[in-house]
Every structure is written in C-alpha cells, then in structure tokens.
Image (cartoon, rainbow, N blue to C red; front, side, top):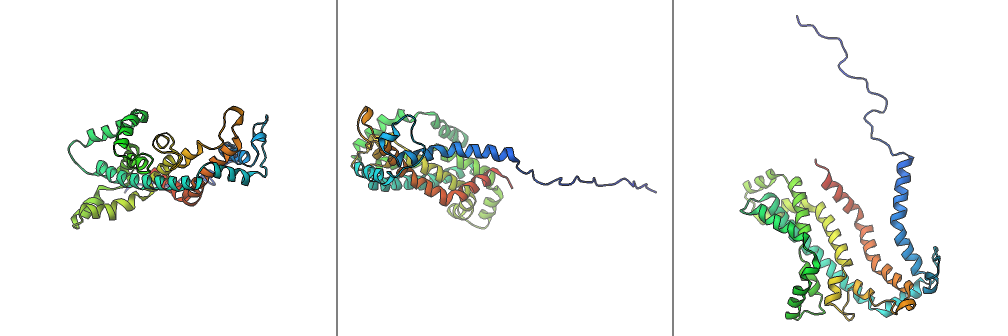
Amino acid sequence: MAVISTAPLRRRLRPGAGDQDKAGPLTYAVLAIAAVVSLFPLYWTFVAASNTGERVAQSPPPMLPSGELWTNITTAWNQADMGKALLNSTVVAGCVSLSTVLFSTLAGFAFAKLQFRGRNALLTLVVATMTIPPQLSVIPLYRIITDLNWGNQLKAVILPSLVAAFGVFFMRQFLLEALPLELIEAARVDGAHSLRIIWHVVLPIARPAMAVLGMLVFVQSWNDFFWPFVVLTQQNPTVQVALSSIGGGSGHDINQAVIMTGALVGTLPLLLIFAVLGKHIVGGITAGAVKS
C-alpha cells in the first residue's frame, strides 16, 4: 500500500504576504519633488505673465504673481492676431492628428498582421526615414509649395504632415501584441471583408494606442514652429508664428512679460485637452504596456 506523507502540503504564508507593496514616505517625497520640478516652468510663466516687464527683468526676478495679467493679455492680443492664430493651430493640429492616427493605424495593421512581399524591407525603409533631419527637406518642400501657389495657406502646413513614420511604427508595435491573429481569421471565416475587419476588429482594439498617438501628434503639431514660420506670415499665423511677433524690440526693449503671456495663452489649450483626456491617455499607455 502506498505511503501517504503527512507533511504539510501548503506553506504558511507570512502576515501580509502577497499584498502589493505600499508606497513609503520616501516614494511620496520623490514624487513631490518631481511634481514641483515639472510644474515650476508653468508656474514661472504665470508669474512672469502677471508682472510688468520691468519687474521680470529685475535680478532677482519676482516669484509671486501680480495684477498685470489681464493688461499683458490685452497687449499680446493686440500685438498679434492671437484669436486667428489659436483657430489656425486648432485646425492644423486637429487635421494632422486625425490623418496621422488613421493612416498610421491602417499601415501599422498591414505591417503587423498582413503577409505581403517586401513587408520587412518596406518597414525598414519607413523606420529609416526617422533618421533624416527635417531640415534637409525644407528646400525641396518649399519649392513644391511655391509651385502649387500654396504660400501662406494652412494646407501648406497640413499636407506634408498627414502621416508620420513614428506613428506607423508605434501602431505596428501595439497591434503586433494586442491584436490576436485568430480574431482576424475568425472574421474572415464569417465572411467579413478587409474594411469590415478594420472597422469592427482592428479599430476597437487599437483605440487606446490611437488616443495616445493622437495626443502626442497634436502636441507636436501645435508646438511646431520651423516649417509654419517658413510658409506662413503674420496675416495667417499659427500660435507659434504669432508668438514670434509679440514683445517686439531689441536688447532691453524686449518685454519679457508680454512674451510669457503669449506663451501662457498658447499653452492653455494643451492643458485643457490634457485635463479632459488625460485619464484616457494614461489608460491607453498602461493598456499598451500590459499584456492580458
């Protein structure tokens, strides 16, 4: 007859074993310091915008807000057409974000799950374009825009940025792990064509990564200065182009307070978008980082 061991089959767990580690005082201290360091530039922008140019130029500069914010906003608004600049930046960043997210998702799906000749070579070529400095394409791109008579028009800023190699690679890496091949095969067995698979299978799964990519592209497009400054003028500016004409003067005549006020006004839409969509963006990042 077999001998059954009477030794305990389960180990006694220590009290609290298996619980998640709790953050200690050092963790909160490090996070608090990181938060202060990260928020200080924004705070200083607000302080400078609420003071006069003379006080900002003092040494040491003021560290507390004052009551000149509305006056500086009025001055900045009059020196540059900030209303039109905010509208133009919204149109440009919105169009670029939507097109980049859509095209990058489609291309990322093709590179991740579709089999076709030359897929790896084409993906390598797309990723390799990320190593080319944007400044190298300014002259030929400007000649194309000039030949099309698109100077000082928003489409001259939008069309060259409809898709980005980073977006294609980002969506490809996400869909490679998040989209099971079995779902695509099951959809094809049920008679779904490619567009239906993309609409009902790919897009719902890719939604978290699309939100993250859209936010990243929107911020990058909103903050872009070099190319809009080349093709646009102060009569039809984006926010960054309009800021270049604020606080004019030379040497000590430059009004730093008005410049910081314009920067604060140009930053507020981004802060508003992040306040509204921040939860979804962080959720998308964590969803893409954890495999189920």
